[in-house]
Length: 159
Image (cartoon, rainbow, N blue to C red; front, side, top):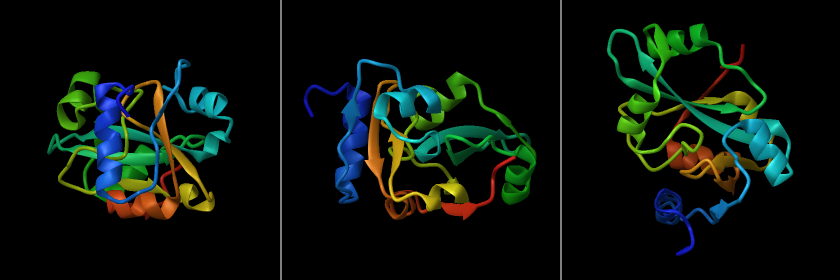
C-alpha cells in the first residue's frame, strides 16, 4: 500500500475499516472516465460505478450519485428523489465536500448529509469497479458491498 498515492491510500484504509476485501490498484493509464477505466481494467463499461456530485439548487447541499458507466443520469429523477432541483457541482465544490478531485471520486471516504443514490443497473453485475481517489486508481467490489459501505438507496436514475 505504501506505493499508492495518498488519496488512494485513504480509500484503501476506508475499505479495510468496512472489512471489504478490496485492493486499490493504481495504473499508469488514466481511469478518469468510465470508458478509460473499462479499457484499462478490461471490463464492461456498465461495471464502472462512477461517482458524481451534484448540488441542490436551493440548499446547496452535495448530492452523491453512483451510476453505471454506461448510463447518463436523469437530473429530473434525481431532483424528484432529493426534493429540490439540482445542478452540476464545479471541481472546487466537489473537492471541498469529498476531499477528492473529479475523475477520481470514490464512493467512500467522506461523509455527506444524505446517503448516495445508486443506479439500479449496477445491481445487475456480479462485480463492479469504482474510482479510488485518483484518476489512475480503482478498486473492485460487489454490488452488495457498495450498498454496505455507502448505505445508499437504489433507484432508477438513467435517462
